[in-house]
Image (cartoon, rainbow, N blue to C red; front, side):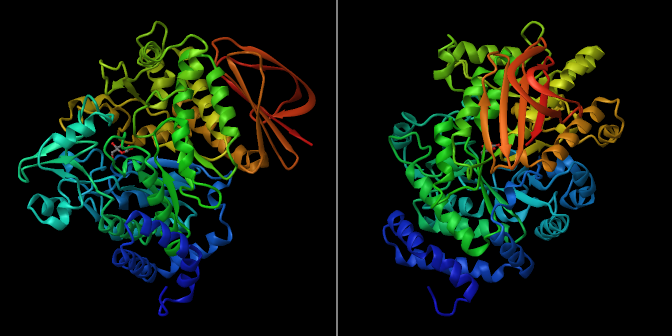
Length: 614
Ligand code: GLC
């Protein structure tokens, strides 16, 4: 604590000082010098923070749950695919507002080598926007425009690695010790091979192994993801200090939500899986305290694509929180399992577990994102029904790629690892729901069925507590983009199947109620408005699962301040009637019709939102 620090910063710093110093000293062996430059850096970042953002910080400090409002919907998009440049996005803010969006997640936009970028996840300069997309000033202008319209902006912070073209990597390659120490270098393959004994692979087919030979350095370097993504060594406090500085610099450009990319991977130790190690939590907690001190209006979104019991710990505890938001990855994967199997029991089980978590734990709910769908399902539960992991994954992949008889789904495999039988899956929501197949065959009934399923999945997402996030294009039923097969820079990565360009002619069709685009768009907008209008959707409410005694139908109850919602989802191929035996009067929020909930009918692949007001 320094006397010259201004009161606002000092007050916030004091709140965390003891814990921050304790954690930092423990991790970095009481390195006083490094700690001092860390805290000096925090103060500098606070001083650099524009007054307009400091005002926003103060407002949000008064209203810390601002991101948990039930009228908030997010959207995730690529700047280039959506509008070419950051300036282009500014010009399209009306469309974003038309979609009812209050939080915009822009995919990685910092400088990254075009031919080795992993979709922008190999950053070569954390202080520079990819020139084709614009400048840091454009980013600031966009966040200002967004704030003017009440839209928060989310950006990735790729902290596990840098591009091999990053200045640090270049200097490390040239032999500068200070920079070598920022990565993991080995003289020979002995230690790397020892790591390989226990560390799984992220891209077993497209980028096997966790290390790469660097001929210029004459050494082996750790590359958990692609060979051109060099893992940063967070055992070195200079790495943590400088990366936190980079993160805060983004916040000072108006970024409200920082997506901590691949965060479980940031600490490595021989003999472990190098995933979710305790030190990762120390680092995230310190980042949280840094943000609460410098820019308390900022949120942390953790990207933890792991089994459920690995995910929730990233919320930290209520006293010592880590991330504000986490991806609800298990529910997303389980939902697609349910689409394929038509059996909602695993989804019910999974949803019930979610309901047991503290209400403060806020999930980001989504159907699709820029990545593949990995089958991280609860196989312990599925085994009770005789379903084994490998054949079950095969079934899901066969069904959803449309190989299975009568399956209307269209998608492609991702990182098919024949040794493990572990392929993942790529495709857009609409194509997975059957929109693409129905359009190709011109079958109107199949189209209606596909659009119904698409809407039902969105309804499920909107029913859950947390922040629902649309994947750009889903609002107009965007289909798979097969053109990536012809692009030499993309063809090896099937995730580009669902990363196609925004088709603005197709977007225009959303205005016509009879088109597929118009039907999906209207359904989503209607649900957003209903969700915003009813306190039953508030995350502070009670949530529970009702026993439908029907494996195809899942029923969620929500209650808050005199409103009770019953949400029913029928994943089966036939209409179902569920005996809930509830004689109260309910309004169907979609059709507006009144009735009781004694025996509730739900159409095939359809849903009901029934509201009772006490
Ligand atoms: C995250 C991103 C993914 C990327 C990886 C490596 O998982 O979502 O797209 O490939 O990090 O940075």
